Length: 387
Ligand SMILES: *Cc1c(COP(=O)(O)O)cnc(C)c1O
Picture 1: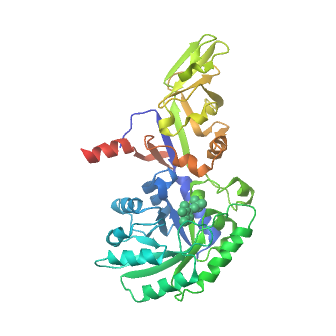
Picture 2: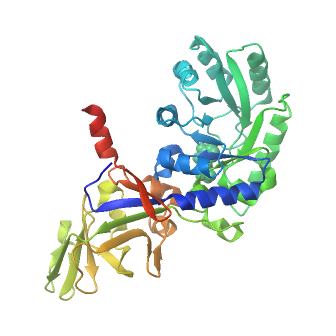
Picture 3: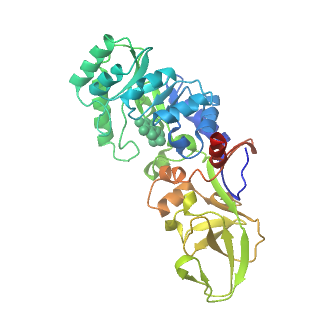
């Protein structure tokens, strides 16, 4: 696979491997690690991250919706895959055909799913809503009703029960404890010991490994990112960031004082200045709000000036630099480092959103032991499938 553009993301698969292995050691041998690779592995690249996580010891995978799971199956991933979100009941048979595990979140959904199963057995994890307020069963009566129904309907196989915390990454733990207690009460109703019980996302698994029951759904921290800045000081092992973003100077020029730069002519050179143009813009996810933020050139921080365009942006260089000089938007250059969290802070959002927002127009290069082992460029993959 090739790409023909001087803007790319590097995904360090050794970092994924390090984070998975460290987490497995932290949660212990009796707790399974479910690698969460939804949203194209938080923008990193789901297939390659899944393979790296599996090699490092992940026992299962989880995604958000059915097509994400089917795509991984089509690429040859054979591990159990749990679909965390709500799947249309019409697609129950398809899930059986791809050997996927769906989330059952209400009795009504189960009734509808049954109508759509012609043959085989649908694997399920039952979602309990203990306070997230998203999907899941909230009442013990409904849970009991579902358990009775599953017992008499062999077209379903219950493999797990789980819940999701809304505040596991916060210092204050009262609400977390309330959710945990509700979950503990609900699972008392589950008779079978062989059922997988899980409630831990990254934050829970990192902070309270003894609250994990028998599996952890490991998402953000697998990518080397902290679940929140509040708990950075509590992390039980160092996380290694897997994602970095780079480009190159495509045009460098010296402009006289007073020269305007970019749309709206909002930037005016205060002196004679060296201006560099870089082929990345808001259509790549480097949104206009990032105007004024810094990038790394030759190990130095330089500011983005003027408005960010759809495909290009300009920076003010401290001196003349050759065309082709590497520019880093996220990652290291020399002693300087721009973290995903730095960008998140600038955008007043969370690190999760930053990597997810780098669009599929940016090719992903996968690195192992310092060399590129694979390139994923959806532009050309899509074209190749249509041709
Ligand atoms: C996304 C998601 C996770 C992973 O959460 P992280 O905070 O990224 O570890 C776990 N469980 C559910 C239900 C999710 O939707």
